[in-house]
Length: 207
Image (cartoon, rainbow, N blue to C red; front, side, top):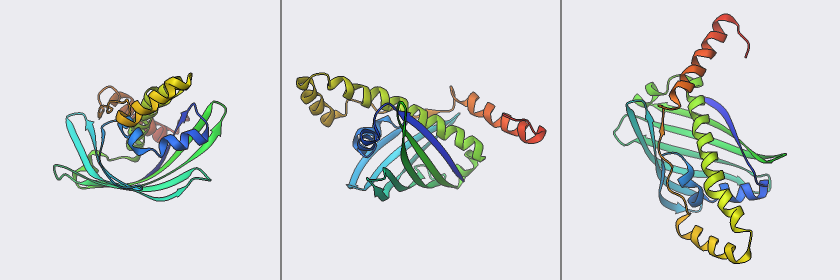
């Protein structure tokens, strides 16, 4: 299945690029993600936990950048992960690029996702998967703005504070890992969106 998502950040494309390519710094902002190993400058190992109602999935795997174009501010990566309890897995090719907008930068993401095993049963329906993906990205963007961008902006107010802020950030990133995504609080929205799509298809309703 293939789908597109996007999010905005209130910084220039140059700054947004630097932030998003700093995997150690942004990993704690991804809901349920844990960076476990840096294999090299383009390859990382980690885990991602997602809760779908009573079903808790933890995918353990590896992400590698296949292509990085700093001039055009775009990149492509592949991610492979298997559920730690042997219930299947997920493979994804993710490409993203950046566009300048009036209030900063828009990050546009294209994902080609394949699910296997029991995991595929939990993720049936492209629309529902896309809704959940957008929820994850929205939460990631919120964490990014609050925990990475805002502190960095504040730290630049004085030169003295900047030096200490950089040291603190490099040591701990100043961020607690984001909690796993749970389709509890957001579940109703995902299900509602899926129902609306079904009604539009049956009755020819417009948005």
